[in-house]
Each structure stands twice: as C-alpha cells, then as structure tokens.
Length: 453
Image 1 (cartoon, rainbow, N blue to C red):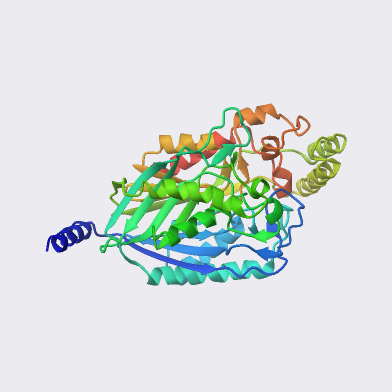
Image 2: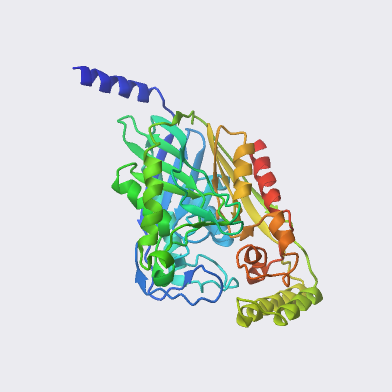
C-alpha cells in the first residue's frame, strides 16, 4: 500500500506539470558505397569502404499549444546553408510550420558523406544519392515526430561536471581551455519514463580517424547516443555540439590503432552524464518563442588583383603541409579573383537562430566558434538555462579568436602549427572572403541580440 501511495504521489506531482508536448522520431540513413566522406581537410579522397556504425536523421518537435519548434538532427559534419533553407520551406509548407522555428543541427562527425549543395570546399564530393536520401529522411522523420507528440510531465536540467576531461584544446595547448561540463535537459512522461534527453558538450568528431579513415561513423557523439539508449537513460537522445572550433578529443583511432577511439571518449562522458541526471533543477517550459535572422558577416573584401597577389605569394612559399597544399589554396584564390572580377559577391551571409522553450533556450550557430566564445555566450545569456548548438543551419567554418588572427596576420605568416593558422586561412575553399579578426565576438553579439528580440 505504501508503494502504491508513493507511486500515486509521484504521478500526481508529475501530472501537475502540464502543457508542453514533445515528439521524437529517427531514421537510419543509407550510405552509398564509395560516397566520399567529409572532413580532415581538402582533397583527401575518402571514398567510404566500410560502415562502422550507422548515421541517423532525428526529428524533435516541441508544442506549447500555440507555437511549435522543430529541431532536425543529422549525423554529418555540417549542415548546408542552401539545403537548410530548402527543407525549411518544404517542411513549413507541408506541415503548416513557421520556418523561423525550424532548426537543423549536425554532430560534426568527420566520417559521414558531405551534406553540401556545392563542391567548392574540396573536402568531399557530394553524393546526389545521399543528398536525396537525406531530404526524404528529413520529411519522413518530422512527419513521424509530429504524430508522436505527447504531453511531458516534468522537465529538469543540469550541468554534469567531467571527472576527467575527454577533450583538449588543439590551438592553445598551454592554456588548454575546454568545456568543463555536460549541459543536459531531460523530458519525463507522467509515468516517470524519459522520452528525450538533450546533452550538450564541445568537442570535434574526429575519434574515428587513422585506420578508420574510410569508414562511416557517427564518431564519439553517435557512440554516446547509442549508450544513452542501451543504458535506458532516455528513449531518444539529442546531441548538441558546443563551441568546439579549437577542441579535439583526447583519444582517437590514431592512438588506439582501431575503432576504440569512439568508445574511450564516449564511455567516461556517459558515466559522468548518468551520475548527474537526478540532480537537475525543474524548468518551466510552458511557452515557446523563436527568432531566425540572416546576417551579413564581417569579412575582408579584396579585389581580384589582391587575391591573385596572395595566390602568387602562396606559390612562392612552403612549410610542413607541402607545396601541393599551397598550390591548391592558390588555385582557389585565382578562382575567387575570377569571380570578383565578374561581379560575384564573395561575402558571407549566415542564418542565426534562437529558440526558447520557457526556462531554457538554444542558440544555433552556423559554424565552429572557439571555446572562449561559447563560454562567453553561456555566461552572458539571459535565459535561465542556455544551450549552444554549433554547425547549425549552415557551414560558416571557423569563428576564430582575435589573438589567433593577429598571430597569423596574412597567409604567408604561417608557421609549422596547422591548427589556428588553418582555421583562419581556409576561406578560399568556400570561395568566400576571409573573416575579420573580430568574427568570434561578432557572432556572440548577434546571438545575444536575437535573445532580446
């Protein structure tokens, strides 16, 4: 009788928290044989020969009775700007949704096919078959998630401290600033079961490298998601990548010489997350709001003549990356010069988004900000429990620090360090102008403006 009364008391307490409805759905992606994998820099020719673990599209819907927000998650390196816009329009028209409330996020695994509508980045030739598979999966999972919506009785959130860091700073190794915690939000039904668990942490998806170079994998994030299911921590996981432009995993397949890099990273991560899930604070999630804005990014605009001069300077120099790398960069600059001479705008416009669900909010960033900007954003946010989702809604590449930009004031100031320099001087592979030195702080300010609107 005592157990029954306790169960009834829990059920009554949970039922008192009503209003938000949540839907979830997932679909495994078919990966064509020899589809080129995206990541690890340009011209790697990584045509897949093995599927180590599956890639998923997952859809999540949140409905407060008046407004509905939708998040589409994909196990890919990034989200393409043009595809995000295309699919946002199709979803809005098909399911009567507000486009401003639809967000696309990626895990940032470097072991999935390129999700890009154009082939100027040179880091993976797009597979038309995979692109169409992805688009169909997006439509199907959102439809299923809408049909799956049910009332959530309780939402709690917390920050799980890491017993031992699973990441390292690849640019400033001496300072080694990394993400100190796993931010999480748990959605519980009236019967006490957990329908959805959002987990948010910063770290590149490059565990599955070395001997797994041509194997499809959702990397450590996919491994963590699978563990969440296996351990029954939640019916469905949603991973949001934090500010990890300069953050790499401690363990990779280069160290383990096999596929254990994923597991060695995900296992302690999940242990720390699981140990914190009953310590969270209850959140009010009764109302939903959102804002989506297309923003002109601060870039260094150059003439065709200036771009050609930079191209020649690259051809005249060399370092550890080898002459072929610099020749390819120079070729891209020559192509940019041609575009500029013919009136093409090589500036950048990117979609910034903020979705608020009562006490918690998610900032969606279309690129890879350094960790310092993620820490700054989360500290300055006004929402009670902020989360950060990077490589979302578009591929804006790295949002580096001003200190790194000043360390490498031009493409000829490179030293024998790859990261840092690489982050600043990758722009030509997108046929876009270089960002100004203040791009990181600009991104934070733009996101905080969205929160105020």
